[in-house]
Each structure stands twice: as C-alpha cells, then as structure tokens.
Amino acid sequence: MTPNPSCIRLGQTLKEASEMIVKLRVDILPVVDEKEKLVGMLTVRKLLSHFTQGNHGEALISRITQRNFATVRPNESILHVYTLPYDQLVVVDDQEKVVGILTLRDMVDGISKFIHKLEQRENTADVLSVILESAYEGIAVVDEYGTLLEFNDAYSRFTGIERKDAIGRHVTEVIDNTNLHVTVKTGIPERGVVQNIQGQDMVVHRIPIWKEGKVAGAIGMLIFEGVTEVYKIYETLQKTHMAQHIVDQPLTVKLEEDSRMTLDQILGVSVEITDVKRVARRAARTAASVLITGESGTGKEMFAKSIHHLSPFAKGPFISVNCGAIPEALFESELFGYEEGAFTGAKKGGKPGKFELAHNGTLFLDEIGEMPLIMQTKLLRVLQEKEAERVGGVKKYQIEARIIAATNRNLKDMLKRGEFREDLYYRLDIIQLHIPPLRERKKDIPILLSYYVKKVCETYHTPIKTFTAEAVSCFIQYEWKGNIRELVNTIERLVTLMDGSTIEIYHLPESMKIKDYGPTSEKVLTSADKRFFIQEAKKIGDEKEKELILQILGETGGNKTKAAKLLGIHRTTLYQKLKKYQI
Image 1 (cartoon, rainbow, N blue to C red):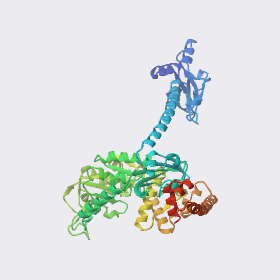
Image 2: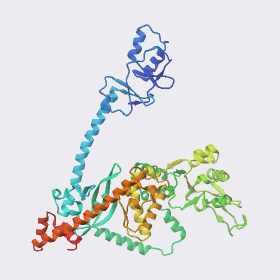
Image 3: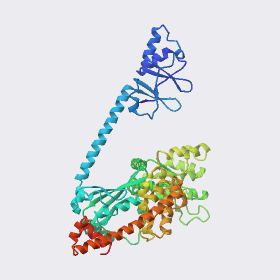
Image 4: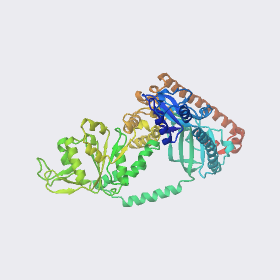
C-alpha cells in the first residue's frame, strides 16, 4: 500500500479538494471527521459529477453522500484483497483511522513480489541441494530423534558408507564417536571440537536447529580432514609464546592486556546484537564521545573496551572509573588528581588523576548517572576546554583522551527532574550505543550457555556439564532481569552445586522452570518420568542387541565382516558396538 495518504476533512470545500488532487497527482481522497476516522471517499469522477451538476467550488464536502466505498485491514492477505471488485481500497486500522491507500498497481506489485518469493524459495532449495552435494566438507543432518536425514557425498567418501545406506539410520550407527544425537537433546552448539572418526582426529561443528522454541534437529560438519597440522601450528605458537613470555609483568601491561577486547569476543549472532556491533565499529573509527546505555549486566564495559581496541587510541591505556563507587568528597581528586599538601592525608608527591592516566587513551566513565551535579559542571568544563587542573595545583595540563560514558539509568528522565545537566548530556551523547537486554536477544542464549558452561567448569576444575533441551528452553524463555551477569551467576551456581553431568529442569531455580511460562509442574514431572522410562527401555534394548551380536559372531565363527553383513550394518559400526559392549 501507499502509507499515510493525504486526507481531506468534513467541512472543507470542493475547491480545496480539487486543489489537493491536482497538487498531489492522485485520483482519490479519503474523507475523515474531526477524530481522524474515515467517513467516506472522494474520487475525481465524483468531484466532476458534482461540478457538472452546477455545484460551486465553495460547496462543502459534508453535503456529499458518503457511500459505496470499501476498506481493508493492514493484515489482510493480498491474495484475498485483489479479488475484490475495486480499483482502489482504503486501508484502516482498528480505530477506523486511515493508514494507507491500496491501488490496483499496488496489488499487482504485491502479487509479483509474492510470486518472486515463491520462485526464490524453489531456487534456494535447488541451490542448497547442489551446495550440499558439492561441498568439500562432510555434512550430516539429523532429526530430533538422531535419525539421519542428509548425508552428503563428502561424508560418504570419508566413511565409506553410501548415502542411501546412511539415511534413515541412527547417527551413532553411521558416524564414529558422534555426539550429534546429544546436540539434539541439549540444544547446545559445539564448534571446533575434536572427534575421532575411523581412527583419525577430526575438527567438527555440531549446530542445533531450533524451530518454534524446540530443537527440531542438528547439523554436523567436518571442518578438517585431520588435525595433525593444526597440532603442529599450535605447538609452534606455544613454543614462541613461552620463549617471549615475561614472568613478572608490570601492572600497567596486565591492565593493557585486559583492555584488549575485540567485538568478535562479544558472543551473539542475533540481529539485535549484530546491529549494535556494526554501530560500535563505526563509532570506534572516530574520536567522538560515546554514550553506552543499557540495563545492568548487558556488557556495557565490554563494548567500551572493544571500541577502545578498534579506535585510534588503542595504543594508549584504557582507564575505567565507576562513578557510583567514588565518595562525593573524593570525586574531584580522583578524576583530576591532587598536588602534595592539597589536603590532610594527601600523598607525598601528589597523585595523578584518571584524566592524566588516560592520556592518549580512553577514559571510561561507568555509571555516569550517579555523578553528583557539582562534578557534572566541572566535567563539562574540562570536556569543553580540553584541559584540567589538579586539586591544590596552579598549573593546567592538556586532556588528550577519548571519553566513553555508560549508564543503566534513563538520563532523559533525569534531565526533566534536574538530576543531570542537559549541556553535559549533549556533550557526551555524540554517538549513542544502546545494548539490548538478554530477553530481546534470545537467539544468543544457547551460544552464551555453551561458552560460559565450559569457562565455569574450567575455572572450578570440574567435568564439562551439558543441558537437556528442556533446560535450554527454560533458559531461553526466562526474562533475565540481571541479563548476562545473572545468566553467568546461574550457570556458576548450577555447576558448583550439582553432582551429575547433565543439567535438567529440576536442577534449575523454581523461578526459571518452564512451568512459569506455559506447561504446569505436573507436565514437568511427566517429562522426567518419560525420560526415566526411555532410559530403562534403552538399557533393555542394549542388552538384547548385545545378545544378538554374540549369537551372530558365534554363527560366523568370529568373522566380523560376515557378522556385519548378517546384521545389516557397516563393519565400522560393528567395531564400535563391540567396543561399546566390551565384546
């Protein structure tokens, strides 16, 4: 449709309507009342009809009969609308207010785009099929039960199992040491992990496929056909690092290394976080002040460090100041420094302020909304004049530092209440970067889970733990008022308190359990019971399978090749099962 069309009001004249039609080059005008609601349509044909009947241009539009017009809603399908016997339709919202005009040309364009999308979808399916079969990397796709749906030629060549023999079978029967069926259960992606396939170490990706809040399958990819060369490169880099390593590093070097964070280290693939990264990269190339806003725990300081690392000030220090943690009486001396004897207890020789320490680098003013008003005035003056003076000093020093501020408060509301200076706000808000809360970037939660579980387990020297798909779903649906900080704290609590290797729904805090978002607690218990019975059934099935393998081996005199043929499985799969059952 053509959005926000020009309308004419009841009470205006036919002359005014004629002038609008000529000026706007349209042949239809919606007529609205004083509440902006649609009451009729005025077309060129109707307008000419009134003029030919002797009506003057001064005649009021309210005298025109407002009938014989049709309206549609914004969410109606173009496939339905185009069948209506009208060349032009008015689009109105639920309050009967005009939001657009739909012409015959608009309908034709809409249907053309619809057909184009259908063609693109068909072409995409063909292209994906070609890519899958021509890809150098092995690619396998399983459904929610771990059954193979796709098994491309590259994987087939490597394993020696033909595609037709692989598809339809459980992935564990085809691929050695696979965890793809586990990925389906946990919903946690694994990237760059080592998997031994037919006696050779391989680097693989395992990526879950989410659909409507549930894991519908998973994709497995072979990245390297062997990791021998990767190990050699790693050993060379490790030797070089050890040779150049300085045992006793100065504190300034450690602080500098801590600030060397890049945007690539900020995890997330959602549109929301990707857009913020793009703006941050553009902001980093300039020397302009940046104001980072967002709720507590969203990672504002991480973005500040990333901007510093990519900026022209990257070679300088990154100095962070928490404006909410400094007593008001010490604010000035902390920011600008002080001279010897400036006040009782002043350090001998004085002390440089944060602005001096950040020379040719970046000064990060965290929680800027907590800064007292009197200090806001002094900070504004320093930012304007680019020079400052120590407390008790008489000599000014030049300020050469990039300023990045951050806050979790609404500064615009503070401006209205007189709690934050308007001139300082506009001095800091040259480039604004809003970090979305975690509940608005749910697509990133499985990635964050995968990363922080490994990190926490390494920190506490505990075995790596995994999540069930139901538990991951709870993490995705939870509101996360504390954002990533709360997520990490929750993972840390789960890892340190639970004994098993799999985190399930009943391990989660009560506030997180999925029953709060849909299913009842009874459904959670039923799900747990189902898992128990499935595990028991699997044990019985394993025992029967072991008995069958022993029977076939007895009949073939221990010939594994013949036994595999009789069992209808590949020889590699038989070896895997022999190892599993310790036969």
